[in-house]
Image (spheres, one colour):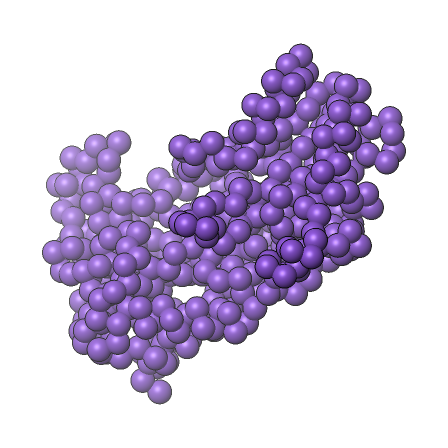
Length: 429
């Protein structure tokens, strides 16, 4: 891993909190992510299952975590199973955890090789009252591929059909959404790397550069600062491309007079940043571009004030919609007649601002959370309003990452240029 070691205290605390939520005499099993084939004999880069990482800190394929706090055999209250390395693996794949290294990373004393898993599981599973199993219950995800957790569940139920099974995801949803101090620090690191990449881009952009050249500047800064890489596929959208919300071709030339909408973030130690900025290719906004930009910035600032403990997700988005409606009327993109005649299901503002304003951020970019759970202290949320005007060949989106605290919001991007004057000064000095 490129990133610096994380204190095992984070993962020890997370396991303690998870165990408190388990019913008495229950067992929980967490699997690492699949290694997905890319083509030929190649796999995609491995990305650890976020729940297994949250509970163990282990960032390696073919790993299993077993938790049984009330196990009658004290040896198996916590067990970590790892792929056993050998000389062939050392030569072709390089470093894998030793048992001692895994103990240090996770704080788990009993580390076994993966080949021992079936025997250990069989020796204790009959003594438990229920088994917690994990699946991806992120409500933004709909699976079409039978991933490792689902295959494991099918196999386990076929061998132990009369056991009582429960969903680990219900407990993880409560735990992962509130960030500890160490998680906040890791997110801050990811955001600082992202900030530095943006400042690098501000000095680099000029008419005639390609979107992919900007992308190259970003990844250069990420890797230089020990980020794993991009938190998600970066969007470098110049001109009319900004009206494609998930544009990532990044293959066009940036022309003088255009805006570039850039949505990117670093992944550091599996924690993510998520930044969006919109800048003028030539270093100066036109009056109309500035007018739209400042409207989006106004909504961003006002919406951020609503990100407080107790706010309800749906109510928040309704309020932001009302703010945006006012700005769109001021920009003469909507008329008051259109607003009065709008439908409740599809408000008029959706023509120019069609996505949500916020999502939770953490080990996943769209982090695991409850859509109907009020925001709380320790939540990290994005705030990302936008206005997209295809008929004027540009779009503007601005995004910060916000931590809710007892004393108010903390903006991880507070030192990342965002005001019109800041952007223009960085690009021209």
